[in-house]
Image 1 (cartoon, rainbow, N blue to C red):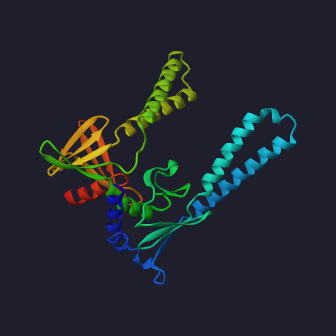
Image 2 (tube, rainbow, N blue to C red; image 1 turned 30 degrees about the horizontal axis):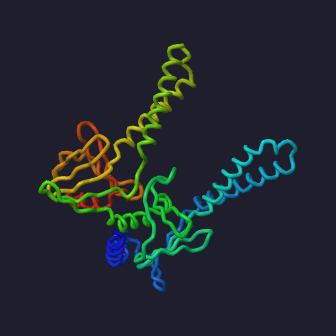
Length: 316
């Protein structure tokens, strides 16, 4: 499997994306430096300043805790509190210190610029790469170099994330023959959340709903009750949205099947099940389908190859 993945990556690295044809389509070819033949993507200045300020804040907080421990009487007896807080501050400092401030994109490699120096990734070499949610910044690509993991966030590097998704999305397909029908299965590049998270959201939503009913029965309907109701609705909505995640797509000659937590949903190649196609602010495409009152979203983040096929199929 690893050999096949390497061969596919090398083949793709010699094609459109790493050959800057992709950049031609996005009107970014003019940014290429003729001397070095690379494009440099930099994080926005406000995001860079925010990262540095947050790191300074946690450093100051950590120093303050240590000073309190060694110079204030009575603090040593509270060692569990300051030990946990120190660990949290140290982890936050380390997390922000790994922020990628710039990416240099070559034809055969790309380089991440961080506080730990330059981290080089070759397209013809194997390295751990996965996609998934990146906290409040939405989608991101996780790259491992040595013992460290660096995150390229979509909000900071939308074009780089898009190119990496298209390059490494090719490793998720698998040809299967069953019941005299051949089809290709596509696994998502990342996972939004697991069943444990969904059940946790449902339980919290249920507890908040019961609390709202209890407060309402006692007649104590006030601003606290309204906030509790809003939180309950938020958790229920998030649980439902995450439960509709597509776990696998099977592509046949005349149809495709979504494997979800609600069972298998089959769609023919006509446009009966297609609701609409749209792009987010960073240009990632999404196809929205509806079946039995439930809508399902095929995102380019997670299924780049399937989105390319749908783009050709529906003439978008």
